[in-house]
Image (cartoon, rainbow, N blue to C red; front, side):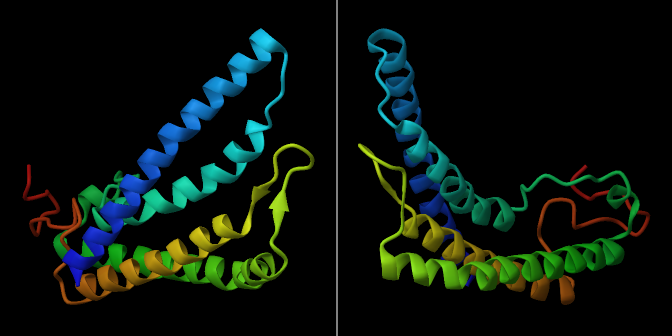
Length: 174
C-alpha cells in the first residue's frame, strides 16, 4: 500500500512541477507583453487558478515522505512512544481537516461540472471545475495517506523523520 501511494504521489508531484514550469512561462509572457506591447493577455486568471492546484498536487508527497514543515522544539525532547502519540494526533487532525475540505467543496465541484464554471471575462476564460476536482481528489488522497500514517503510528511503526527516538528522547538518526 505504501509503495503504491508513493508512486501516485510522486507522479502527482511531477505533474505539479511541469505545471509550475508552464506557469513560469505564462508569467514571463504576460509581463513581457505588458512591458513591451502594453497588451494584457489575461494570464492572471491562469496563475490564480493554477496555484491551489499545484499546491494540492504536491502536498500528498510531502506528507507521505514526512517532509512537511514542523516545529520540533518540544517534539525533539519526547521519547519514542510520545512521538508516536503526537504524530498520531497530528495525523488525526490532518484527516479531519482534509475530510472537511473534501466535504465542504464537494457540492461546488459537482455544480461546477454541471454548469461548466469558468473564471474570467472576455478574451480568456479559465475552467474552474478541474481545479476544484484536483483539490477534492487530493484532499481525499491526503486523508488516505494520513489514515495509513495513523495506523503505523498506532502500532509503533511510524517511520516519518524524527519519529524514532531513544527512551531519553534523542533521535536515533543522530
